[in-house]
Image 1: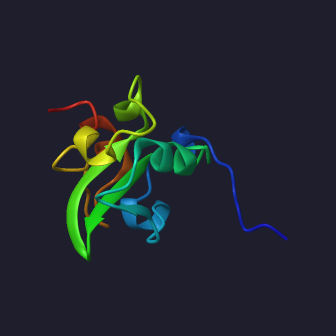
Image 2: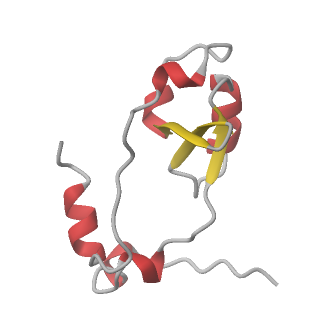
Length: 102
């Protein structure tokens, strides 16, 4: 039996980020290729891949960051230095609203 539950975003906006975000994320080594990133993004549920240099944060790549990139290219060249962040107590409506901010 699958533990996946599909909900609409509107049904979650009154909850906190800690109530709706899973702890386990997806990550790749900083020297991975764009093709490796695309393979992870093949899962529709993945929105962000953390890049790690050993155990140290080296950046993050969103699905759109890889558009037009060559599969053999280094994924780190397409990374942003800071991923979107939220605390567990932040209301999801506020988190979603902040995603469009620079």
